[in-house]
Image 1: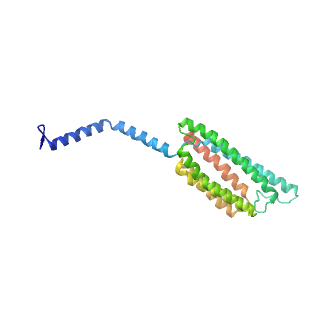
Image 2: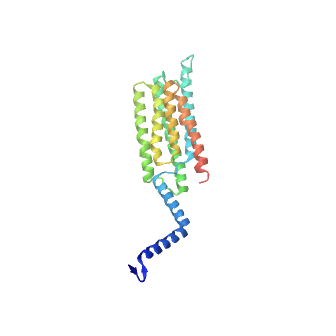
Image 3: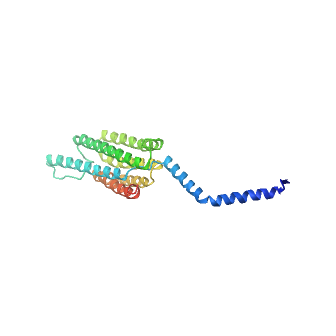
Length: 237
């Protein structure tokens, strides 16, 4: 069969040759378009505006809180003329100190959240990402469920006087929350979650050193993580 004097097979051959030439000429443009589309998809599916500085600030606040809790513990033992002042001995801690510890923990948590939101909002504006969008909502939900569950569980342990397990449990649930939420944010947060879980398990073998592991997990590790994130993502943003 012929089309206007041109064989049909030749027509298809010519068509594919022209298409190949067009594809070759626009190859770089297409690669740029694909790269842009990929970037847009990543931005829409992951919340990439977590601030490294917020991790550093949260770690410093946690260290201050741990220091205050230890100072309160030490003052109590000195006032009772105890010969031994254990470091963060949450195994045989007195009930009258629990309220103070919970109050310090609440202040630390609220302070870390406030500073984290402020710094993350600033980072989101720099990257042109919405702070409270569909992605950040999924991130919050996946982070909140293990955290709330762990918080309630720790309060139940304290209610029953099982103080020594509360610290390891809080670290493990926090680590699980980070791992669970890492699907919707920077993958680096997954490693921090693994470390927090490992610290929680280790603290379970050394009951009575809760504040020490809290200081390492919520303080030191947040500072290390935040510093890495700052130089990796924030500094050149």
